[in-house]
Length: 390
Image 1 (tube, rainbow, N blue to C red):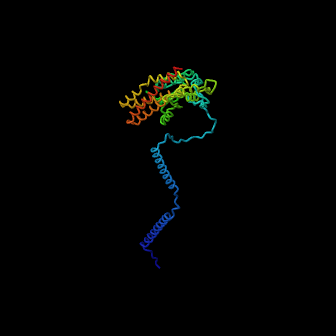
Image 2: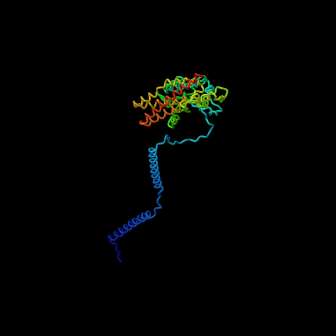
Image 3: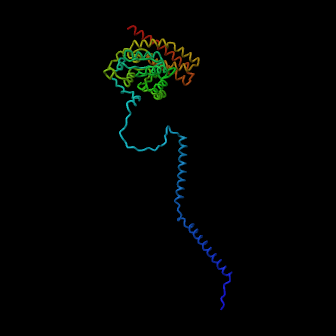
């Protein structure tokens, strides 16, 4: 039989069909792989993405923390704050102490001992326990200068007077060998607070004790004294026993005994009489029992303040409150120093009225001051006559 060949078009159709099947197979295979990836996310390594995401979150959190701390610092700034630094731990060893040359400029405690317990009255003679000491007295009132100078007379203590705070600072700059400064709080030109602040700034004055003198001791003054650098405060009128106690705490003792000698107060008992306008016993006690000194101070008071009531009226009429307050503060302290408590209290009452601008009370209080002043002048004359007749 004759052999027949397949038509050419049939062969081409078979080849084309085979190609199409192959193509469809690969397309189906690819889709299957894609579906498998989508349906199985656990097969994907997400560690890199997780690390990146975590770093982003840390950056955001750290950024927010810094911003809050910055805002807090701006709203409530600390007194002093330093950034943290990395430190290297080193083995601990023996403590390295500063050399003597490195510490010779540092302040040492000025207080040497506690105040003593007295079994008998203290007189000005006991101040000789501190003979050889050198004290600068900053005081603007002449009578108060005399009272203090007389108290130290014969004690062996060198006393130098400065009339205001500026003079005191200048004297210390010229001679820093003083052991103590008795500093009046209220003075012209430069008051005791400002002068003490200047003293405390100078390292040469570190060993010097500064003691405040004030007849007007309020809570504000006490605060200012401490802030300025004053160690102690002595009230006016200055008492011998209180003065002794302060000297005892801060100065070197040069006598053989650490306690003041026992004395009797019979000399003071002799003066416990007379008008209440002038407490002679109190005045003598302030003067350490020295009648001659007391008489001189009374004479100084008469010369300086016998007509002070006229000056009060002048200041009131001219509305010069500043000078009136200064005069009353001055007389308050001076009167207390001589034992004239009623006049001292009257001066303080008038001063307080001026400070609160209680003008309707000025005339009445000025008259009261004048009455107390003249009662005191009469008492002083009576006392002087009694002394001269003995």
